[in-house]
Length: 59
Image (cartoon, rainbow, N blue to C red):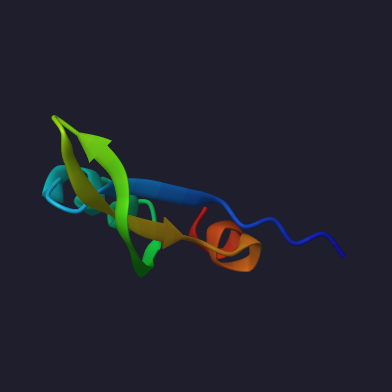
């Protein structure tokens, strides 16, 4: 049995990216705090994911 775990990671303030991932059936898994530096400032990243069985059921 193969279990893949597609993930998406987006900027905490990028609501368009979050909506796109959720529209694809992904769910918010959590937040990686101070994950990346943008414009000299540490920013959080939001992680979304979907399981194989969820992806297959949605297609």
